Image (cartoon, rainbow, N blue to C red; front, side):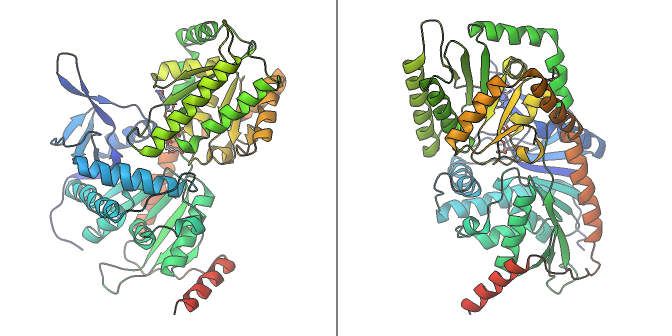
Length: 505
Ligand code: GDG
């Protein structure tokens, strides 16, 4: 055990982006504004109770700041140069890992200089966390941009208890194995005591990769990592399991109950010409979200006369995202061309088929939109969880509204009373949209009530509490005592692995 003196924080969160944004006022004054994401809401109470620090990037290249306190949270900025942003962030994170982990919907690019930058930047984040973590602290690393950080932390600081949560899917081995650095990433993640995934399937994919690539013994939810024969590197048992993330459900309900937000919802409907049915899509403009599939289904329904433009408007909020990555520029062109065509073909002087918005809105406006929408369309081709689906449900305190939900989202594991669809099956999607528009009130209420119960109970506070409880007990288990060997699970996977090993001998 190291005897070096360490920093003073007992709980450290490490994420690519900090929970604060730098805003410049018209008079040139700069300040930090708290960004009210779900993760911040979930971790804020833990941060305050445990004297926590948050390590991350400010979101702008080449800006260096000393640590500071914002709204009671110690902020530890990590600086990224324009080259880091290009290679580690836009390159390896968003153009290699993102498409690879989302079923290669877009082709991933593999570049060795991007990988080198990923390693170097992960080390910088790890070093920043190492510098501020107290002896025996809990460090919780977030998401796919930082998969090497757990091992880097463990190597430097075996005293730490280390958690990792993957917000996006973990792909099946057949896809994951494309990655030239596949073994290094598994090894990096296995530096953690607990690795959290959105779905059981993601955790199982990860375990299988650990078994196939490193030969480790796995029995869900455990992976046995052998020691290296020194006191500082004992054998450990890593917990790799599903912890489905959620939202601050009651905050959404509270907002939705505000009279001014309900009035705004009515105003939105009136602004659209008071159509019988308002449909809604809210997504980052990302190729994983299936916006094109949704538009295709909607356009065909109008063309076939199964929906009438006088009766139905689709509101599509497409939040700008990763605008410097080529695949995203192309996606924007495609989506906007399709929206233009549908509006051109079916719009009338008084009714627009699609009300399209390429910008973000404040949270209040989002909730008003959720209340204004009779049908919510979530058609992702692959999505770790999809919080929008949960936000829609949490906001509908009136127990009305129909959620059409892709089965390729983590949310569909829980929201089984939604109309679950396969977005690739355009005819099936069209039938579900029509079913949603025709669903009787009693059935809408029955389904919404049951989904609400679930979303209100399983909120983000519960998610973080469960993860941290698992982390604490795993940390205690991995305190250096020898671990009992676990039995092998999934004999078929083991057999495939053995055959592959023999073949490569
Ligand atoms: C990743 C994973 C996983 C969107 N537009 C506006 C706005 N939003 C908010 C939504 C929601 C969030 O952004 C988007 O979350 P999602 O879960 O839908 O998707 P990703 O951004 O891809 O998130 C995903 C998530 O991480 C958490 O683990 O579920 O699978 O890909 O909260 O409301 N918020 C406001 N204005 C907008 O215009 N205020």
